[in-house]
Image (cartoon, rainbow, N blue to C red; front, top):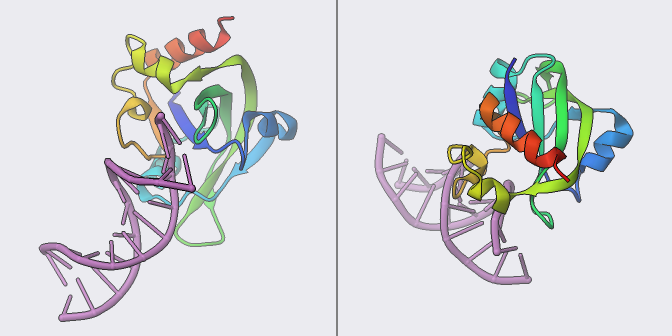
Length: 136
DNA sequence: GCCAACGTTGGC
DNA sequence: GCCAACGTTGGC
């Protein structure tokens, strides 16, 4: 079981959209590193932190899971996966919180200039973020 | 909306 | 293969 973080701008697709749709095609990734993680790393059932970028506030808004492993987009050489809604956090775990939480120092998303829209997350990091997200 | 940090493209 | 120009991402 692997853990991931995937970014989406809420104006384009939010956790509420995913909650409504239950499952969605995660298409439009146009970065090779991100594509490689989807193509080579993601397995059905892997858990995903759903991250709202360019938002107010920006941060992790919930959890999803991989419903279908990578398959080709119409446009070569890109691929997409299917993502299923798992839960929405009562409150967004903000980027600010992630940055100051012990144990998350190595998370890719907290590093300056990190634009990777699909990134791996270590299990301990995943667990810390989920705990923060479920806390009222 | 600004702009710094990245990634990609294309001329040479 | 270098690197300037350009396009995009994403925090603020």
